Length: 208
Image (cartoon, rainbow, N blue to C red; front, side, top):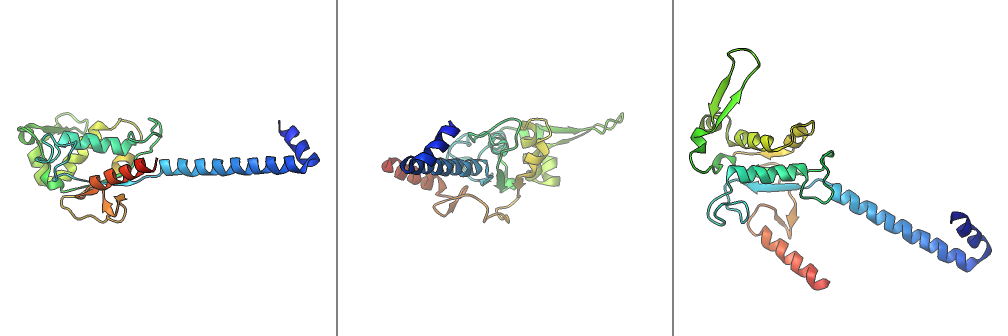
């Protein structure tokens, strides 16, 4: 096929112009696909508040904040990149997640006093245990959230790298405000960002 195209280019100027333009168009499309691939593999920053009510994560939407289990499950999905079409279990294609207000983690029932964490250094008689309320008082809610997310991630060589992209803070302030993805100048996680996403989708559907 390549030899035939070269002969045509040498013998007929019209054919050569058509063939070269087709090649340039193909290269342009290839470049466009390459840029889209890079964009799909790029990491973005998400922000979630552990104290604000959420439409899909809260057990009572608009009333209670997301529970610890639902919040950790959503964070684990973002860290692994399972929300992306390029997800693969053998590659690390996840995003960054910033969680604020971890001091106000919402736990249902009596889990705060009944949940027990164990650790052991493999020596006889060295089993240590601590309840969730003591752990939160000693290390803060960020450590409780990190342990919950760690338990939901696959136990392989990628877990430490994924956990490193989780940035948890006790209060509402954090140094990653410029990195958080925005929709209509409204950062994800703040009031009104979901309405901005709906408006963008409606505008896109009208264009189609």
